[in-house]
Length: 79
Image (cartoon, rainbow, N blue to C red):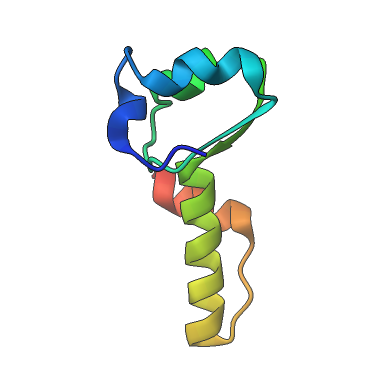
C-alpha cells in the first residue's frame, strides 16, 4: 500500500518492491495511472481513483439516504 505521492515519479522506490508482492494499492487519486500502477500491470491493482469513488458513493448514501451505482459515480468523476 503506497500512501505517498512518490508513486507519480518514474524513480518511485516502491517500484523496486514489485517482484515481491502480488498486489498494489496506490492511493494517489488521479485519472491517469501513476508510474507505480504502470509498472505493476501484472499485479492485482487498486487505484486511488477506485478508492475515492467508493468513498464518494458511501458519503452520498449517508447524506442523502439514496443508493447510487458505483459506475454512475465513476462516470461523473471521470467526466
